Image 1 (cartoon, rainbow, N blue to C red):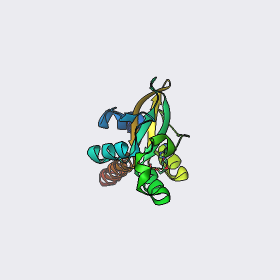
Image 2 (image 1 turned 180 degrees about the vertical axis):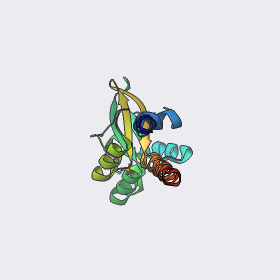
Image 3 (image 1 turned 45 degrees about the horizontal axis):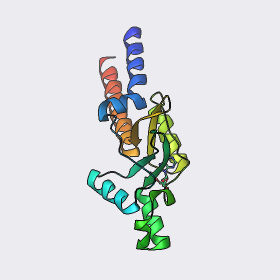
Length: 158
Ligand code: AMP
């Protein structure tokens, strides 16, 4: 019925936000200071099986992001000596962040346009999580499958 359909739409809106992704994966974020060496950053990326680290200052404000791609480019340009340098020389300082109320589609579009696969999530200037393209795609696929199932059921009972 009409009410049922509206409730489903509402649930969908909630399910398709950054907030709901964080609720599922948690809000733990690995951060490093900008004096951390690239080789220490590489060790952390490997240990935690992730692709990027958020660089913060002592107050916890975001100063940059360093991904495996930055490390590869830096080594290609400067050789393995790059590993001894501080992450400040490698990181991207102009970080695009999102909030919990961004939708999965918003984030997909921002990541696609900017050609990056990670986004820190901020609430009132504080870092409260990171979402990756993997989280976004997973949620999008789940949602698409759920919708297809609902449409099939609707057709079957029509
Ligand atoms: P990635 O696809 O996340 O490995 O990152 C590709 C490039 O984009 C690297 O140079 C990163 O430093 C940079 N990058 C990653 N995430 C962001 C972000 N949220 N905002 C701006 N640059 C980013």
